[in-house]
Image 1: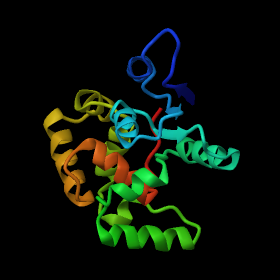
Image 2: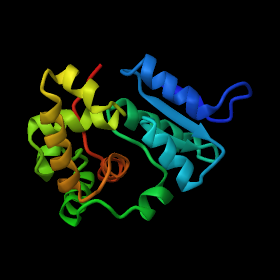
Image 3: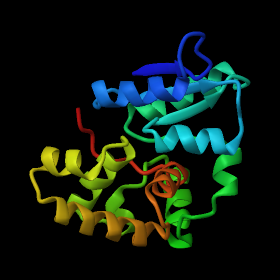
Length: 177
């Protein structure tokens, strides 16, 4: 796990994030930032961050967010999740039911195949289709088909929105190193 402050004195934080994701694709990166602007959060997630924690967060929230990321999920500030109502209603209901029961929602619970769950897990890590196809040993065209199905199931139009939906749903995704 890497914690990254975007306000680096000698480098651009987003450039550092991109370099970390490129050099260490299996290491989750969580951004810790003074900014709580939705566009900053979206840019970090789009660049491959697995979480975004405002510096104003409590210690308890920080620890919970890190636990969530270490379990393979995505953490986003509640304000950002509220602004993006992209997840399908049936999935949100199941997510709430799973949370009440103390269980994580599995990708199968909302209609994903095992392979789609694998693709989604790698997509959430910020990996491009070429790396996903290599890691899963499937054709790039097959990855594209799975990504299209994932976006449709989550009722979103792009990868960033998919990551937000995964965070909102609290999906327990497969782990890849």
